[in-house]
Length: 99
Image (cartoon, rainbow, N blue to C red; front, side):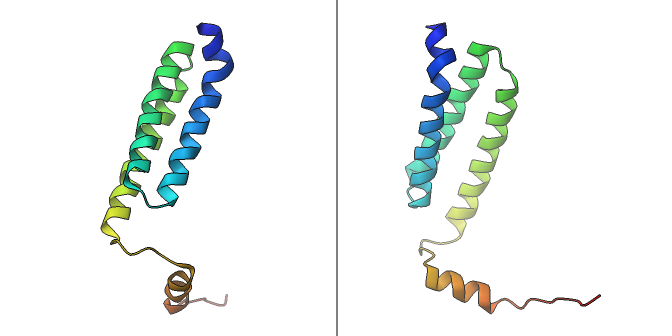
């Protein structure tokens, strides 16, 4: 089992993480749960392999995911299309100082 963890577990965890990011990009709520669950798996991987630096990374990623979810949730239910995105960008006044 330890050999499998050393050889393949990080690939499985990376695929789960990419899947979670994909589903978050599709604005699905459960994509956030996939990402948080994946961070729990990274913590288990860190303990099983003795690579304790992954614990810090997993906690940090989890905190970012939670904060991003709260921001995403508060931004409303409308999807940001390219058209709306460009309107948002161009509507902001940019103050460039010449020095």
